[in-house]
Length: 187
Image 1: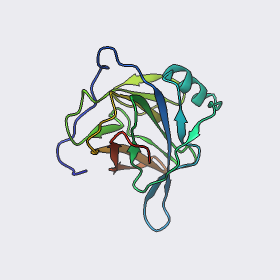
Image 2 (image 1 turned 90 degrees about the horizontal axis):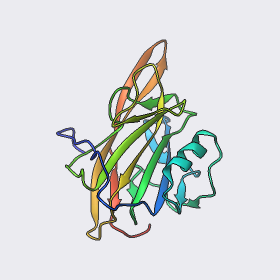
Image 3 (image 1 turned 180 degrees about the horizontal axis):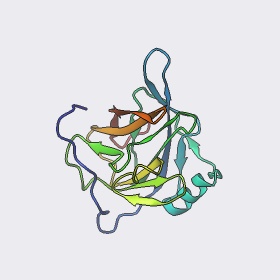
Image 4 (image 1 turned 90 degrees about the vertical axis):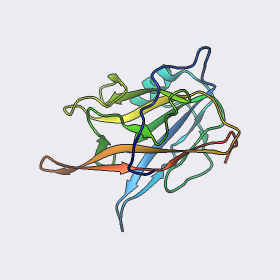
């Protein structure tokens, strides 16, 4: 995605919307030879739209059985096939988090009716609407709703806004810019 204008996600779901599944992505970073991002094997699909139960289970490290994604990509593109929630958790073995007091994700186009309801969750399970909590909290989980799966081969560029803790109070902000592949077809 270009570094030009970015857009926040919409604030509310379309009337009558309900999620058919939750797509969970656990994102990791390897810094050998430069930054490389990929989804971990724990990523997968839960055929339920119960986001509250899913987030509670994620925080308790008791996730339900997930259907494997069946793909890994670099950059880590998101694939949408049905109305759903997308959950992106940053790998806790890497010393990083979503940038504090800012949205963890933004879009290259104004698609607020398609992607909506950004919630970020801190390590204590507190949820913040539309952005990560203040700098004294760590947020490695975000989720949002997707209104529908397009049938037009859509690629919707997005940015993730993270920061790495380098120690001694030094942080390095970074923007990750893959795509949301929202074309209604499985990988």
